[in-house]
Amino acid sequence: MVTNPSDYVEPLGKAGASGFTFHIEVARDNWQELIQSIKAKGMRPGVSLRPGTPVEEIFPLVEAENPVELVLVMTVEPGFGGQKFMPEMMDKVRALRKKYPSLDIEVDGGLGPSTIDVAASAGANCIVAGSSIFGAADPGEVILALRKSVEGSQNKI
Image (cartoon, rainbow, N blue to C red):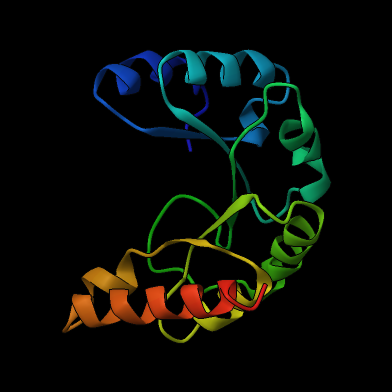
């Protein structure tokens, strides 16, 4: 999470980033311009919301004429790895999936083999996992389990 996302659009675009996700909490007043500049640099725009932010705050960004293409629901407070997954955030994921069936919905924080099924069945189709993969004895096995859960849930939606 950065406080001035517009400062990073050009450098990340030049570096070859394919997507750029910003936190709504720091872009409430300039999200339209931010989305436009992200797309102008050839990147896919996404918006993230912290656990305390109501999901309804991002509805205008998904429904805009120039919309975001991904919503990231933080399942921990942003800032450091290894935090415990907050299952109550799945209400946000379910609300987004119901309202926007084809939207890419990403979850980040505390995801691993013991929490992936809850996130995937709620409607998350993009997973960020750090500690559970890099701390595993067999990272490939964890990645396979995460992928299998998401793909299995998507077939049911």
